[in-house]
Image (tube, rainbow, N blue to C red):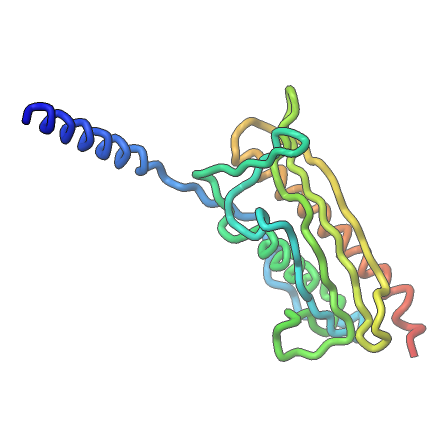
Length: 204
């Protein structure tokens, strides 16, 4: 009987210890999203639709990922994105294109809006990369612009950059990824601007 009581006490103590350990708060992070756009000046008479943004399964979930080897990727248990990186990318891209004021309209492909062009993309990397003595935030992504009238791809852009982490905390990693994403999307928006500036007026 004493052995049974002792066993029950040990089990209760283990459950209590587990309950105490589960009380650690989860911290959520997000990236910078541009403010609401000013009224469009419609430099280009184009309705641009944002289509599917793909990515590996780990970037379609919320945990913040880190790479500690060539083939090893892990995730933080108590540090999460407030939404999956592929969704944050799409939202930020949509807002930046709207904020540029260059288009008649920028909308989601799934909406009721009809558009002449569809921009699709894929997020390949969005994670902390650890190397001896340094940390970086890696962002790799690719976008393609499709002309719906001619049924062909007319523009593409690949971006990949490792942004040094200025610190050692997860928050510092998030800041590096945010800066990197902003730089990459700035290049994408500028590239689209250059394409339409050079080609739209000659289109029949």
